[in-house]
Image (cartoon, rainbow, N blue to C red; front, top):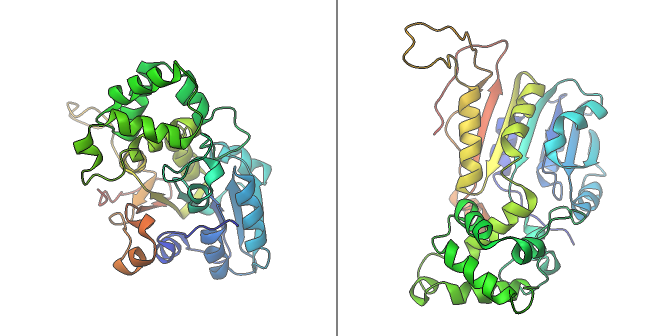
Length: 321
């Protein structure tokens, strides 16, 4: 059964919805939690376009949203193709776009998907089960230098080189086939003092890094955020929920750049670029309240950023950090 607890649900809907008869795009549909809340606010003339690449999510969301009071269109695709999806849906402009990034509770809690370092399962980690690249391919075919780079860049793992070396040594004897085998390698590579420290499970950062590599999670973000803003109506809003520093940095920097006016080099005495801000940042990033954290520990690292599309340029608010 597909089960996922949507984070920051009330804050997201409050910040995203500006028109109850509008069109809203949920780029990370999952089980339909956020879309269900959007639907509960919209009038019968409203519309939701839900996108997900996971067949299990599509099935669960279709069932969950079947009695929604507004129009629901569900598309199995990756949000990297947002522009093409909206064209196929014959939509020129929308009132809001939501990105709830990261891996879903369902994917983590389903052992055979291979996302969790807490359960032994085949190495997989594909959000789209039909994709060619899997965790097995990454772990067993990438060169040592490439593995170390991924662990360092995507996992911010201090022991990246040592872990990569241990993986190469192990797979020279036999392929690394399960999450349990990978966890064992990581635990052998990481010094005991670190394994038993306060930094969490020693495999956490490596698993995050492999998952990001398998699903190209960071590579598609900036372009997708810019496409979303391009399709927003003036006054429409983009809402982005991030769960770790790497994706949050991309969200923050992309939104901040689109909210800037002049982009001329600082040494120029006058503006010659005539660049106008595209969006206005709405306040500081929102984090989960203690009440939500008590019921959903996975909301601990979540940050919600919201921005509003400007009409032909205007004064931007750079209040987010």
